[in-house]
Length: 140
Length: 108
Image (cartoon, rainbow over all chains, first blue to last red; front, side):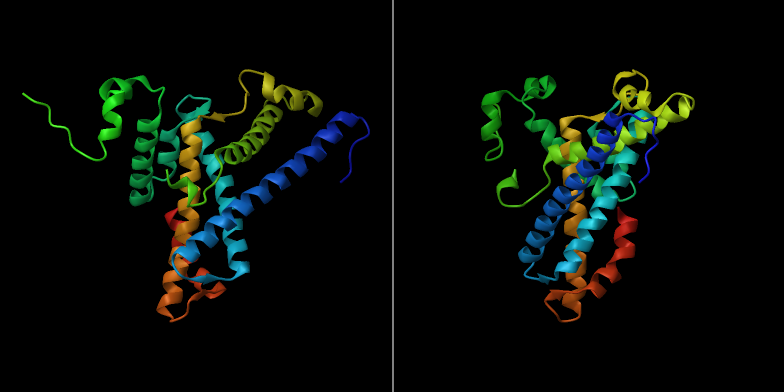
């Protein structure tokens, strides 16, 4: 790649580093994607050939690029600079089942969040643990 | 969470990747707005100028994105696995992925 003379060395370094960082990120992403795919295949008792796994990892990386663009657009459209869970759910709105499953996952996350005040008020800490085993019926 | 058994993405990795895309976008925006300024300026300015600050994401949104990506991959494997099973084989081959790819991409 040709670099103009008047650009500083600093910038050249920056650019090179930028490229290598994105390569590193892509590789790390692929590795995670591969382990997920292999785990899933094993769980289903299937064998999966290596090229397919690599293919799926690549697809997922393309997908994350698209997702990044979508999330940014949604957040900006809402006049925000930061992406929230609602944006992620909206990005899956074409698929109702997917959106529903994301919504329930987001509810789980919200419930787990210790610093969210509004949830805390509703469910006191003590009941938190008991709640998944037994249903508490308050005495009247 | 079933984190210990089922592998998933690390939110930090996803944040880094998102950031990478968003910073690139922010730099492009800056360049479009001030086409005359030198590239050197926009390189530094992307993070500092208030209007063109790159987008960020909150922690839960990142976790949710991890889940979305995980579901994408598991769906790909499971659908391809179903086709392979229907053909009476236990190995997922390229043809199986090809068969499910169009619908998968429509669904995500």
